[in-house]
Length: 97
Length: 435
Image 1 (cartoon, chains in turn green, purple):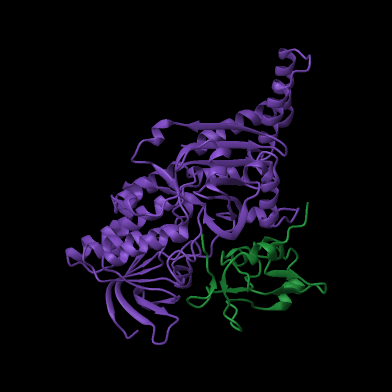
Image 2 (cartoon, each protein chain N blue to C red):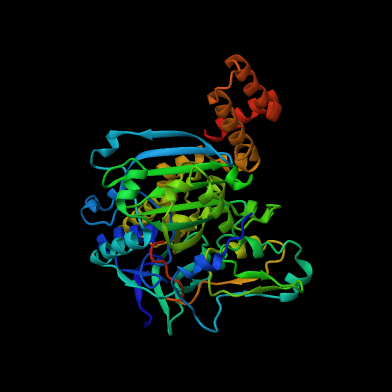
């Protein structure tokens, strides 16, 4: 599998980032680190917002979020994703959709 | 916003919300529509195909000014293995005679156009406003709370057209979280190319369009399909698989890597070569079908479109179901309003009756077994595409082997892969899933 750079794709998109107010939060970082074996969000998220860190933790940066909802839906075992839409007018702004 | 009372609040300005708001406003009801995007369409993602019939029922002359890309004259279905495809193409000049049956569209433009119609009809639209939750009085929905200061608004009935994530109904406890086995995650890109290049590559004239649906080894055994649509001066290419399959895929393939693999397929790459990528999008599609449709009405609320799971995955139809459910919900409210009835569950159950009598629930019912059958039968997405492509290659390669021997080899390859019992069971499954 050839490595695909998702950042290059996201760079084409338009966003209005709500600085300092991420619309998605990991409820308890320890759950991801210690209890979640698959950490499926780190490869299912289509914007690669979730990253597996070297120390076993999962980090989340929502700036490139496409607001699909996948991360919330797949976190079935632990329900560890607090997911809201961004505040009105913020987040992804599709030019074409 | 001061506390103001409307007849109806519609949350969301996609196909279902716009159709509902338009129909209601046209009938003279006092309608507030709330959209979280900068403008209607800026949060909305679709392939996208517009089916004329559902829109014609509310705006018969939409063709006069709607932003349409190309009318579709040819439908292709390609079954892929890693290097080849076996395909069926249906092309008819009958599809070149107006009124056209379906079009490719670009949703950000189309939804914006639809919204101007909604406002012309008399609805009040507020954008850049996210509805945080429904206002409840016991079991009765009495309005919404927005993320604006003093953002409480009241209405007799709230129509939830808030999309696949169905955030508001979920928060209100009307239904549970989505099941990863009932939604597909699709990613797509839009690639710009000169019109004449698109027309030459797809053998089409001005305004004519082609859609290609793709199934095969590209999804790595996951239940899913790909697509390639021709717009005016762009192509949209995408791939979607069941979200639960993405999660369970032992190869841990990302959605964008899957899309890139599709773009590099030797049968696809020449069609999209040189396309300038200008946007990358992702979206969930509710594909659970009949059994996944939740309760869609209650005291003071109704659910329409993706939020209610109204998608016919087998036929790749969704926006037409969205528009139709939006219209049927609106008609239910208009009738009740005229009769002076309260917007209770008892009154609004007429919406469910209208849904059941329409193609929406009839089609979902027809394919009610399909999601489970496909989920239990990954062979349709890997084994068969490989076998069919190998069979075609065997038969069409002239190499001195006699045709009877080739036939036996092909039959043998199917038997070896699935056994007689498997082949018969698979044929039965597909038959049963489609009726």
